[in-house]
Image (cartoon, rainbow, N blue to C red):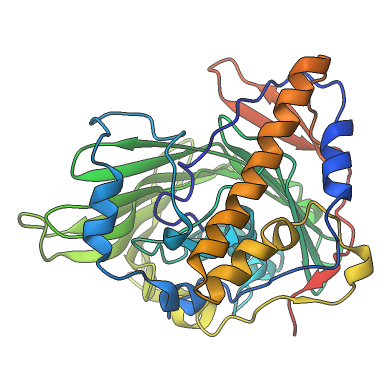
Length: 409
């Protein structure tokens, strides 16, 4: 998931019209596809990222924003490796889908009624909310970077389809459960003096093919607080709609009972499930996404557990490389392998040099494309702009093939 500054450190400009990706493919061919560094996913315990928290964290973070004005767009802000966790943002997005304890995604496809399936979709949506760590951010994916992982019959593929603005696309299919996921995420971060808020634009589509149901939903925003207390929380409204069943849900992520930035119950989520036409509430939702979220039947008063974070996002397993010969050179775990390994070893000078090398290769490719008149095109998705200048991504293939990286059973 998105961590502090995880989507704000982007540089190179990107033009959308497709012509060729020859230069990108040539650069990828220079990297050995068998080199990969895979690290534990973000979970309730914080996982590997918690072990790499830099000293004097607040002072270091505040120093980064010394010359940044409130309201500024941070998409070209630079971050040293000391503040990076050893993984790419594409990996964080993917982990929200394929790294899970209790499988809420498969529950969606096994619901006996449209209402039961809808409630399961709400629970699954909450399960994709993962801990955000203050002071650490994943790498910003380079243009054309991919991440391809399988868990059982679920195959997940991500691609960075734009670098500036940053846009990530996800496609996942499960032929056994007849499930398909399509995401298009565009974070828009801004500095507000005492905080940074990254608005996650774009839609997620979850399709239950067996029932011909398409669920459309958005994401909460990441709020990074600098003063008077530090922290990173998911906030804002999330809507989930299924036109096929006529059901919808409205969720609100928030922190309650705050006084001067202190106290309050963080990681709270509240909402309701209702009929779209009558707007009549069926269920009320209340709880904390990192603990328990409960579902209350407004008619009977019965309360049940909708989501249990301890079962869903604790003790998550680290993906492993099963078939290195089949891994693409554009794989996140390969592109950032040298940087990630240096961070794991706390060799900050080596990490900085390796990161600069990755970024310089991208700038070189951009200059070569510009001089030759070649425009880059995504390899796995088509990209279009909507009427309101937002982005929409569609997969080129009907299904995602099995991946060389797998989540162990």
